Amino acid sequence: MKKAIHSPACGEVKDSLYSWGFVIAVTTVAIPLIFSQFPPYYIKLASSIMIMILYGVSFNLLYGYTGYLSFGQAAYFGSGVYVSALILRSTSSLPLALLGGSIAPALLAIVFGYFCVKRSKLYFAMLTLAFAQLIYTLIFKWRSLTGGDDGIVVPRIPYLHNPLTFYFFILALVLVSVFIHWVIVHSPFGHMLKSICQNQERTEFIGVPVEKQVLVAFIIAGFFGGLAGAIYAPFIGVISPKLVHWTMSLTPVIMVVFGGAKHFWGPAIGAIVYIVLKDIITLYTDNWLLVFGLMLLIIVLISPRGVMGVLENIGTYIKKNITKANLMKERIN
Amino acid sequence: MVLPRRSCFQRKMTILLETTGLTKDFGKFRALDNVSFSIEKGVLTSLIGPNGAGKTTFYNCITGKFPPTSGKIFFKEENITGLPAHTIQQKGLSRSFQIVSIFPELSVLDNIKAALIAKAKKNWRMLSFLSRDRVIHEEAMNMVELIGMIDRANWLCHTLSHGDRRRVDIGIALAARPDLILLDEPTAGMNPKETEEVIQLINYLRGKTETTFFITEHDMEVVFSISERIIVLHQGKVLADGTPSEIQENPSVQEVYLGGVL
Image (cartoon, rainbow over all chains, first blue to last red; front, side, top):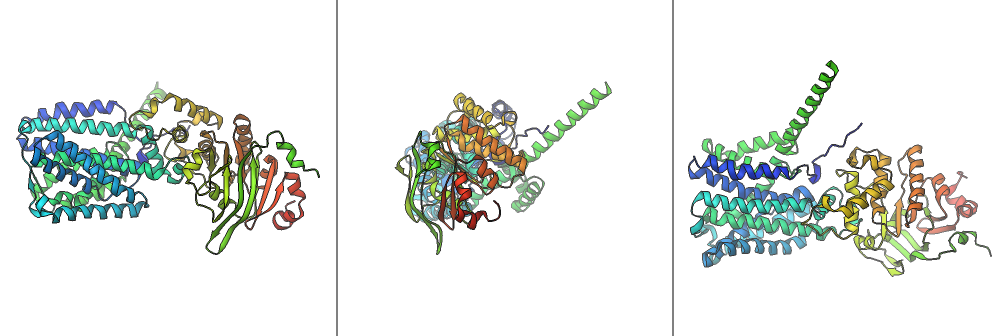
């Protein structure tokens, strides 16, 4: 009999709450335990991976689940960075910076998203890119506020001075945020997003205002993309318009394609691979993007569903062989 | 004068859907020309006509895919002309499409659940698990059983046969328990066995639900076997309107449409 295979295409998620136990165990116990033996450099690397995971996961709520490819997430990440930095400079209150650094991008997403979701997919991508470039230019030119090309030095946060403490703070923030994403994609709202991804017309004709639904997903992605930026500012210390540049919009796209858009943990895997590879390759050559581009090409050719797709294929292959072996044993017996 | 077709719906003359002077132009081409008629509750009505007669355009106008050029549409005595598709759907008017339109990467059950979430207006709930929603789950299971797919509830839809996909398609449209359901050529592209199954399904569902069916069909055998009333559309105009036997005897219908078939 034909068996229902839970395909991960179009946001169909096949993980369970157990995967959370695994993730929390690895990130809270194993990584710091290993890293405490190493120089702080590696703890900082782990922290930036965490931030990129949040950025990637928030982007994937829109792309992987709803099917809308945003090419301008840097607008929300970047505005989060700048709002957070400016608040920290004037008040030096981290909670306020995180709040402002995520609400301001969300407000931005409401305005930009309102126009973007009215367009079909390619035009949607181009429009998001156009809006992101608008923000980039604004930040680049507004010297008196943003320091233009020179950037801003973000004051240190006294109680997060130790890299390991900062790592744990970022970890908690990212775990809570990613868990919220996880709940959202398993909620009735998330079910509607998957429906839109697979058949937009049908979703409209079961009585769902598709545009509004996508807009809300867009705002959520903007909010959490902004939050990732808001924590990135005090973490990195010095910020520049590079963080709002379109290449920053490309980062989550690459991470998601690498890790697999159709799996919840795809962007997380992509973020880990992206940051670690970047770190290793830059030791040997300045043209790290060339090497990374080749690897991306190979992954996409092997499995359009990214690393998660490859892992899944291996998983099904092993399962098949186990059942085969069991059948053989039964026959012999 | 005796009007035999009236007899079958004399007991309840509730008018569900009414159009007055519905006209739709695509550029210079007039796809619908002054179409006026009404659909009564509980009467299985079929809309027939040769290719290009305007059947699908008529459906698209009613369900809000695009607004008519002129004319008015009333659903349950409420003017729904020009409303967006999702609002019309929420008022209790569902449809299926000529080409099966489902969510291919979701299971049969999840397809039905999508329709139920929309109906219950739970589509904004984002901080609760769908799998924990007992009400939706039970309603969805009931619907899956009604369309005869209970043994394949967890199958992904793209693995199903064409006939089964059509079942899911009808299930999605019917899940919201609409007052009126519009099926656009439900047997299109099917072999005789599948066609027979769909006819049986429609007859079965009519008995099990309160929903009124309104069908377009190109297969004359299907039309005459299940319809209680037939409307013939020709070049965007209503050519004839009556019971199957009346339509069969109508000379102008025979001339322009049925030709040598009867």
